[in-house]
Length: 267
View 1 (cartoon, rainbow, N blue to C red):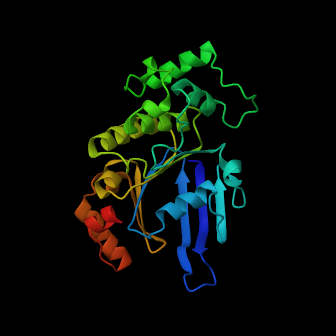
View 2 (view 1 turned 45 degrees about the horizontal axis):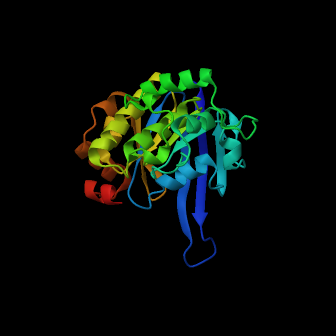
């Protein structure tokens, strides 16, 4: 199956040459095939967010290659990678424009990367598309197209952001702890919606989480980082049968260190 993302010997350091120098990613090799949904877990400082930012182009890697959809993107900036990548952040206010309506936000998402004028006008044909897509969320937002996004709850807003990131299906969807700022019930709602969108739109996705149970329950493959390296990589039947104690034992066996579930959640 086609590789959507290839990371080859990725290294990334910060504050190089100072007493605070921090070598965060240490030779990451990772290939993600089309329609794989990878959950990424690891403690504080393991390199999870740095990894996602290196894929998105927020950070330029110090060494190695980033291949996205068969194209060498190592030296491409965020805006150059944006046409291939959709992203949802932890902050529910990122990814949407507060003062614009739901339909205006969706119009921006549909037109992302296209040459267009300054008008935010929504055509009737687009409006029908938006209603259809919003019904998919099962939150009743299809009846509130004219509502300003700033009036939505955190969960509604994150669900809308998820739709905006995928309304034009990206080659790769990056989910950067996108449920961490939500209460437990809303978090599970958004995770369930994430599963549905990734599955039905046949997307390729990477999702960072601190929650080991969520990492096991969602996605088709689980990757665990520790000190800038991949120490666990499981998929298929092995992942389906995995439990939290199994994962902790696998981590200890492969890394030589110990970690508690609390350490990951609090990390």
